[in-house]
Image 1 (cartoon, rainbow, N blue to C red):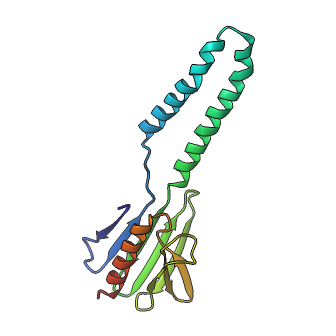
Image 2: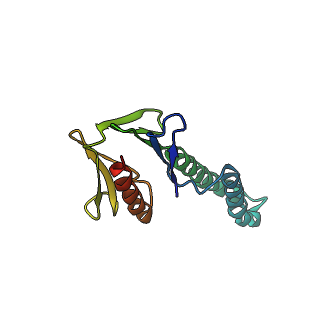
Image 3: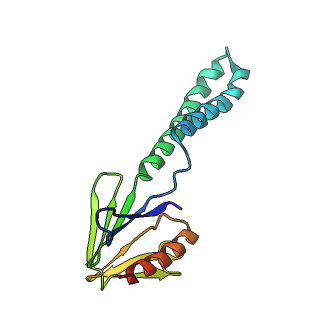
Length: 162
């Protein structure tokens, strides 16, 4: 699962939950995919090698390859999100670190913090939110449907724990 609970060695009462999106393509996989795509797109160009038609087709091949490269890089950049939920005996604090570097924070008295599972009506099925101190914030929206259900159950258990 793309999240894990971390126990604080210095303070046994403090727990942290780190959540991150799936990252299915490694940097080596990225290079292999772009190279393989270039090789496969170039195969039909072998038939027109040495003719004027090659120069008419080559810009379209390069634009397609460049577009795919940009899309993959954008996807990798957008996946650089991490959410950290810190639970102390008295506070619940959620910090979301966005790809742009900015951090969004939510802080609440742990007693009033309540996880909610929205089976429908959210942007994704089984949408998980935390409610407290007059605000509702999403958590783990990038997780799969089954992982959000599991996350909700773990949040309920963790927030009830004293």
